[in-house]
Amino acid sequence: MTQGPGVIWIKAAVAYFIMGTALGIYMGASGDHVLTPVHAHFNLLGWASLALVGLIYRQFPVAGSHWMATVQFWLHNAGLLAAQILAGRYPAIAARVKAFRRTQTDLVLRSPEAKGSVAGLPLSSRRSRRS
Image (tube, rainbow, N blue to C red; front, side, top):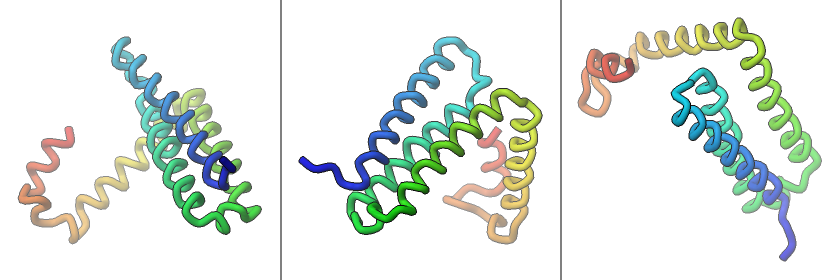
């Protein structure tokens, strides 16, 4: 069986899935959840994103065969690993990212679209569940 352009993406996604799952099991067993952002990024940006792109390139092999798909693959993986290393090594960077996410979440919750209810829950109920 010949390997299409999306196969390398799917193989990399499986590697990130294994790393994310192993890290999650370690954190759960040890009770040390300091690496939660790394775990989340391995699962979302590693596993989910790479698997999705791999499936798209498998379905549309012309797009996956283009030289830009190769560049995208290496830049995505290098950026993902660099971000995890920087966030783990430099707590100030992780704190700034966390503050940025908090600010963005607050902006979204204060937006006119967030007023009222979502799925039948008033805004006050959603905030209490988020804590």
